[in-house]
Image (cartoon, protein in one colour):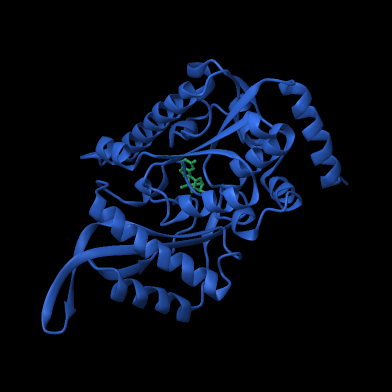
Length: 319
Ligand code: XMP
């Protein structure tokens, strides 16, 4: 039966010892619970010798980057670099439709932007990462073919290129334990219980090419899904709930006019560890509300469909 306060105390002491009296550390913030816990723990351990970098790739959920930065700036005196790189990411994604290519481009561009930030800070010795126990196990023992089904860009890659030593304060923890640490650190529900969000972000929820116009449509639809799940209390009951923009248009009718516009799919799932998942039986009134709002409020969408597939054989994401 392990006690979280003693975990924290012991680990902050261990981090201080590992890092030493003078060395500096850099960490990448994603807005997710893992990287936020790493940043706050290190901040408590070494204060201003920690530098956090949050790269806004323009593909985050609407307002999410600003929200996390505002929260952290208000509550912690962090060295926080909020890098605006939307244009770079969008220009690199221009004309790209293949999901694995999108992943690679976003991964490489992220490393490039992060490295540039790191170089501007002199004397950094360590890179802190939110690696969890299951990632550690997977990278040691998991070499099966499904390893290449999707290349997860947020694991590995950075330290080799940058010549930084790694610090992984969460490497002994499972996700539920990280959430307990987050509560212990006083982090709010919207961070502790934030839905998992893929490293390649909304790019893999925009099927086909990512353009500014299609990104705007998806962000607005996604915001409605998020807000209605929050308002009805379903946000905290499901594993993930989001919108996907499909690469097709369908016919609709508005007044006397025929329309020919985009389709949004709703993906809302229950899961314990993302290895298996099932579609959540969200009450039909809530689905109706989400659908009506998206079609009425998001210009360019005239149809909403519900994904009723389980994983396996489907996956949670559509790309
Ligand atoms: P799938 O779609 O494989 O997703 O059922 C399982 C979980 O992993 C997330 N996911 C990703 N996370 N980079 C990430 O960091 C990725 O490329 C990626 N693809 C999927 C997904 O959101 C779900 O929680």
